[in-house]
Image (cartoon, rainbow, N blue to C red):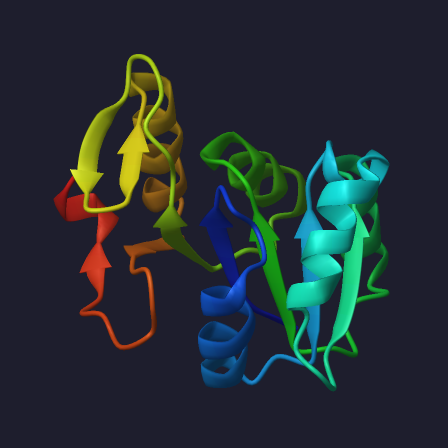
Amino acid sequence: MIVNVRVDHRLLHGQVAMAWNQVLGSDCILIANDSVPGDEVRKAGIKLAKPQNTKLVIKNLEDSVKALKLGVTDKYHLFIVVESVSDVYLLAKETGMIKKITLGGVKSRENTVQVSKAVFVTEEEKAMLKELIASGIEVEIRQVPSDTKIMAKDLI
C-alpha cells in the first residue's frame, strides 16, 4: 500500500527519513529515480539517511512502475520519494495507483516560478500538476509534517 509520494529534489535526507517516515508509519521507502541507481556516491548518501527498521529500495522509474504494477510492494506501507514533478507525473500516469502527492522541495531553475517557500515549478510542471489534481489526486505542499497543509490547487 502506498502511504504517500513525496517530491523532493534532495530525495532522502533527515527531514524525510525521520519526520515523514515516522508520521506515515511506512516500513519501506522507494527512491524512484533514473540517475541514483548508477551513482554510487548518491546511493551511499541515501543509504546513510535510511531510518532503522525501514527497508530501502532504489530503482529507476521504469523498474519502479513495474514493481508497483506487479504488486511486489503491496506487502509494505510504502513511502515513495521522487526528485521531480515529471517523475511523479510519470509514476502516477503509468501506475494509476497514486492518490496523494506531497511537494516538499522543488528547487529553483531557469523558467520556474515560486509557488511556496521551497517549491518552484515551470509552466509545464504546473500543467502536469493540474492534470493530476483534475484526475482526483490530492497534491499538497509541506516540507515537514508539522507544517500547515497547503493544497497545490490553490497556488497553481
